[in-house]
Amino acid sequence: MVGSAGQLRVPRAFFDEFQITSLSAGHQVRIAQILDTLDTAIHETEAIIAKLKAVKQGLLHDLLTRGIDANGELRQPQAEAPHLYKASTLGWIPKAWATKSISDIADVKSGTTPSREKVDRYFSGHGAPWVKTLDLNEDVIWTTDEGVTAAALRETSCSLFPPGTVLVAMYGGWEQIGRTAMLAVPAATNQAISALVLKSGATVPEFVLRALQHGRTRWQGVAASTRKDPNITKSDVVEFEIPVPGPDEQSQIAQGIRASLNRLELETITLAALRRHKSGLMDDLLTGRVRVTPLLDATDE
Image 1: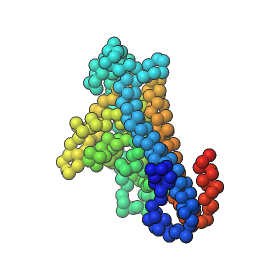
Image 2: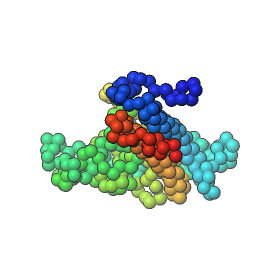
Image 3: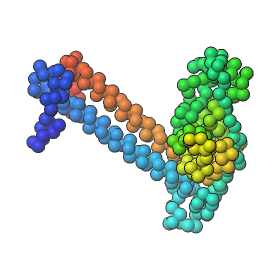
Image 4: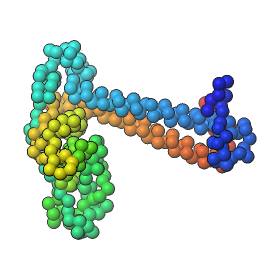
């Protein structure tokens, strides 16, 4: 949209599409300037989001393999400080850490699906959250699309798991197995999910969530299927190993990852707001409901 002399050039098709050829050339250029300013902000925010996503993956790996030392800093890598690490079944881990199976730290339970033949009795949008695989958002679950009624909890094997329960998907092929989430509220699940109810307050639920996410690719080594898609079993979940530091370090690691996610969420919200703002401005400016000059002055500021 910018010509070789630094002037804005607006394709005629842009204005023809919105049937605003009656606007003066000056107004057309000013409208394009406003929208170009918003486009720049949108592209910059998209770039920030892409960078934050890449940083998040690197941070997850570093925190789950190196951890945080007594000074609140990432430990040096094993290659640079081998004396800080020991060999384990999961590779090199900090000396103070242990490797534990899920059965060491949690009771692994299964959910169920109440009979769909009694859908009016057992399902309600106002009932207790009922988690399916596609509800697993790799983060905290507050609500779900479907809920189960008190009758379902009373008359079927469906039961509520407490907040802090970590969920793992067992079925659905490579795109779904190992998918995770953590309950923020009491909720039930279907039978495709293993619910990890932690045994002790010495294990931080969000740390377990992030450790499972970091190790997700390892499910491919244990997945099996007698059907079209590969699955994992409750036994696979019970035997799955994760690295476990002390409670304080678990909390620090979880907080570090949470801070990264919060920044990513903030930028994502900003991007959505910019896109809505551009869409609304296009409608207002191109119909003449909003004057161009004040808006352009505001963008110049």
